[in-house]
Length: 567
Image (cartoon, helix red, strand yellow):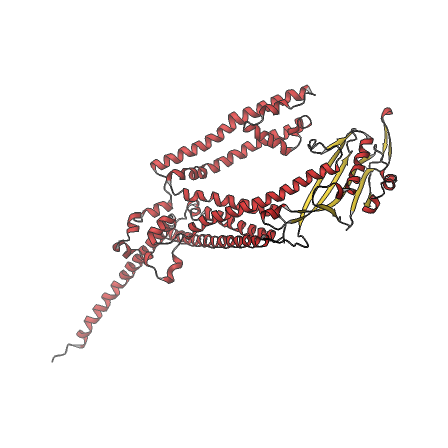
């Protein structure tokens, strides 16, 4: 057997090794290009999956739309919870208002049932002033014998039962209106006395004291304050535990104007407290337990919704980061801000806020139910706002249909222009508000305060109460009366015929633009152009084997689940 020469034997392996070295970079380049294409296709499919609606996601990957089911269940439960709490809150408000009216009839002499402007009633003579003050004190002493309600005496801040009477007056002075002379010290002094039940039993003694000899020319006001306790029994009819109340009542005889008219103000501030001893037989306690279980279930549902929506936002931010990195690496430029905001789903943010408010409101409601807390107002604000956001969120699912989606798109397109327009119109509106308050305030009830002026002008913009606004102006000053006509006519003409029409035109223009886009197609952004490279939705849902061979993201391993954005 003839063996080849050593050098010749080494030639073939050397030539083959050089060939392999020359093909290595090509193979690596091809593999890198193939890997880049696969990553791009996976990213494109993940983006497409993110922007699908729940039905399309289910048809594509058979993913159950848990959030959609939770939102439907949450709408039913949150609305039911709100209705039950609203009925309970109505009983609380009604009890407070009815007791306030009853107290006015009990303690205000000559009360007609209708307040005079922002005060309850008024007196015009010294005799009527004395009688009104003594009437309050006597009625308080006879309360248990004359009251129809479940009220009793309560302790004040000093842990005393009785009346506290205070009077404010100028320190000293003399006044002679006939001679147009005045000598008075503007320093204000306050003198108070406390009348307990034992002292009230002897009216001659406390009436004859010097404290009740009033010098009206330097008297500013007399304030009578007392506390009462009451129990709301009507909640038992609704199978709820009753509430115990403390009413902090204050009656003020206001003589600061010294105009010959003393205004009498009555204020009753009700606070709910936990009843010390409750012994109620029946099914009230069992009904309370059922309501607590229902509220706890609402908290669980909202917590699950909160977790799912938060997870979706986190995954969306991760997907946006992948897209921004890929776009910058391949196209050497940044993605526009509009495309970046497409990844932030505002509906999810609104659902998260709604869930947080519902959870906090439900916890407060449970504490109120067991009488550990009494803040009905805060609880009603939280539950009411959360229910509002829940029902507004339904628009998201209606937006999947083209005809219903017009409203959402129109609102999104017109909102920036409307806000800029309102900022400009608001300057004019504020100008009219301040002008009307300073000029017409002394002559018109609707212009006495800035908030009432703003409410009156807003009503005029909507065409409400126009004739009454014109007619109620007092004609004591011809100059002010003429100015009021010029003021009102110019405001109505400017805002109704010009500003309001422009406001509607902005929204109409956005609506026409959206309709035109729906017919001719919307302008394409970088994100939409990138998604065009993906196959049609039907091919995606068919999941052909040839297509799946190059789309690795549809057959990921369990360890790669964090790379796929799931809704």
